[in-house]
Image (cartoon, rainbow, N blue to C red; front, side):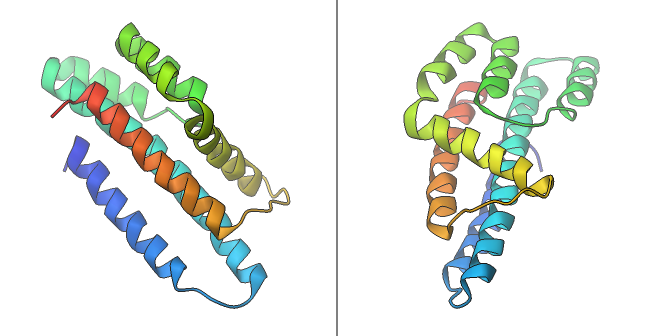
Length: 156
């Protein structure tokens, strides 16, 4: 499974996790812990989606030796905040970078940068306050960002 199909599969898995989370009631601390976990998953989804979509573009347009090289480099792509994603897309096509820079403003920028910052805070053991509602909000926007990136890299 590659590219768009892989992204769709991961999105479905994450959607199912969010569905289970939406039915969770009870202890506010438990809900906060679940929200932190979901932040980590959403950030990972964004990172992997960008990688998979770019790899699909390379598979379609390049020789296998170029694909191997790009795949090796992309697998090291981490901390997918707004600026790093724009830079990465710009390295493939300057117009993609410009387009994404224009798109990733306001609530989309907040969602991308927010979820990555929360992931880092959680991973480094810092105290984090995040609500389930905020994570749901971020995830909805990040799904839109991923679709926008897919439209740039692997248009239908």
